Length: 499
Ligand SMILES: Nc1ncnc2c1ncn2[C@@H]1O[C@H](COP(=O)(O)OP(=O)(O)O)[C@@H](O)[C@H]1O
Ligand SMILES: O=C(CO)[C@@H](O)[C@H](O)COP(=O)(O)O
Image (cartoon, rainbow, N blue to C red; front, side, top):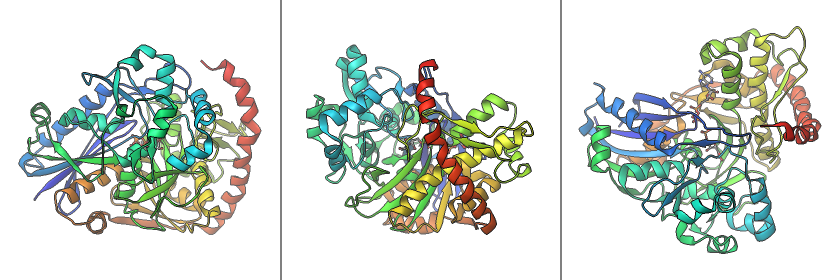
């Protein structure tokens, strides 16, 4: 039996999957690393940790009795998007990576609109200026850390840096390049116009390849440390959401994905870059060649739950904590939560907004808080579902992946709030599976990603909405929607007190 490896460089952990030719995950290793949050709005990670933890994970995988490393033919990567890794002329990392959920760059976003114009930005990149994207981060470093900026010879996205460390080859692929605000999305080339306006040398941008391209093999050192053969073919891979879409079989029009990791996304496949969503949702290049996807993003989806667990229930596992979901009633006894712990993207692009618990009552106990956190995260994802429906899309079936798809009750809550069938797959590891599928196609096991999805993507069950819950949640959702408007100004005032 032959194997490929899919690596998902997530925000909470790197997940390494060993996948056989039948598409079954025969071994899975996860290694976590922390966020570095020095100030409110800041979110960084040490790229060296990504490399160390990935190598540890690969070593554990190849060292197990499940596989002969000589049978592993290919490896590919999915990764958290938008993060800025800056390298100097010797390809050394210049500072910690600034991540997708770091919102220090509101001023730089304003500047992008002032100097390039919102309309021109949307025409070229299909996306608005949001704090999490890479260009504002690059401008922040240029303005605030000039010495570091002057040393920079290239920037990389997180999984592209990891792949560079394993192969010695510097590349970026289109699905992650799309999240930088420097790519001309339709033309698939770095925008010299945007670089010129912001006086950034175009050669700061790494060479572009397709997600399925073979970019080389492992370095001798990486092969030795990981236990893999030096002949393993390395394929470029894609943004975690692009790979999540591949891993969930979102490869044609009409298919919708909900992914609840640290962030949460609702994603819809698009055949072309011609549609106009006026920047209400993100519009990116897919990992499938010359295809696209649109998506809405909740910044703190799984992160809201992990925050709650860490602050109020650090001794409990997620399974123990989420047992409380069944004990609490629908609507959490009148307790509403908004998951804006680090600001928000869709539908409110607002770095200042923060989360709320509304309606706290002396009768409430921990179970109600857990339920309201899960319901609030899901309401936030429903905001994106509503945008797609308003644009004329039919959403009656949603494939659910990510950590949030592990829990039965949460899947039912998704079905009831989205008023759609929710499909659970055999494995919730969408991005890692998508990366493995890119490697499987690259190794010649399949001629198209669709053919590969036919063999690899296996639905486990379908959760249907319960009509009385749908009605109750529709009423509660209206109240949820009001919380943003009612708390916006209060949160602006509170910003001065944040540390
Ligand atoms: N057993 C579980 N049931 C439901 N949600 C879970 C469970 N375990 C983890 N999670 C949620 O999944 C999130 C991590 O998901 P994951 O897809 O691994 O994220 P990332 O790719 O961002 O690292 C956590 O923040 C947590 O909220
Ligand atoms: O910023 C985005 C998408 O635009 C995030 O979805 C990141 O890509 C992080 O993903 P997870 O670690 O939550 O999977």
